[in-house]
Structures are given as C-alpha cells and as structure tokens.
Length: 186
Image (cartoon, rainbow, N blue to C red):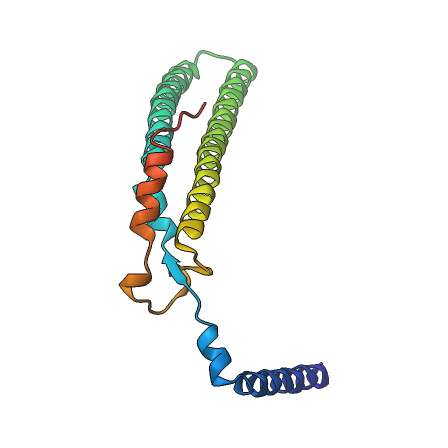
C-alpha cells in the first residue's frame, strides 16, 4: 500500500514537471494570443435575488406553515384523547385500556408518517422550482457568453480573489429576473 502511494506521488511529480516544462515552452507571441475573456458569477447570489426563487420559497413556506398548523390541531386532538384515556384508566378493563392506547399510538404513527410525506413533498416542490429556474439561468448565461464573447466563466465560490470588473453576477440576476419574473409551482 505504501509502495503504491509512493508510485502515485512520483507519477504526480513527473506529470507536474512535464506540464511545467510544456508551459515554459510557449513563446511570448503565443502567450499574447492566448488572452482569454473570463467572467465570474456568484450563482448563489443570483438565485437569492431571483424573483422566481423568492416566489418558490414563499409558496413552500406558506404550505409548510399551513401543514404545521394542521398537524398542531391533529396533535392537540390526540393529546386530548390521550388525557381522556388516562382519566378513564381506572374504569376501563386493562384489555380495553391497552386497545384504546394502541389505537392512539397507531393514529400518532399515521400522523407522523403523513407529516414526513408532506415534508418530503415540500422538498420535492422546492427542488422542482429550483431546477426550472436553473434551466432558465443556463439560457441566460449562454446568452451573455455569446453577447460578450466570453471564453470562460468561473464560479465565485471557488475563487480566492477576482476583480470586480470580471463579475457578471448582477447582470445575470437582472437578465434572469427579466426572463423569468415569476414561476408557479404545483
């Protein structure tokens, strides 16, 4: 295992040395011709500023609040039934008490399962909206690439530093909002 690691390290050093020598062989004339048009984009910021994404988030939060209120009512109903069962414990037979308690436990499990399914549905709903927005974002970015004749776009999150002149985040956000001002999700 150590022998394999050493082989991999020596191979990596060899490749790096080869690449470094190849880079140094590029003439100055060729280096001047290799000027790339580069831009930087913060996709997280674009999505946060997207009107469509804000609408998707509002829809999801609204439905989540509605579900939470509905489940609170169901839980309160179960709690009232449980308290009533506890009061009746002294007058019920042990078998009847156990059966009623099992029924309440079964109802509680069904409510938890329903809540889990609804949360899963909300996640899917949000992801569906996000995927639709990302499709439009790709189209917007391609339009900007063609218009500005860009060679490379880098994600701002993977950079240590970039000049503001390279940042097209605001332009992309404005174009996305113009292209997709609203999104209805079901």
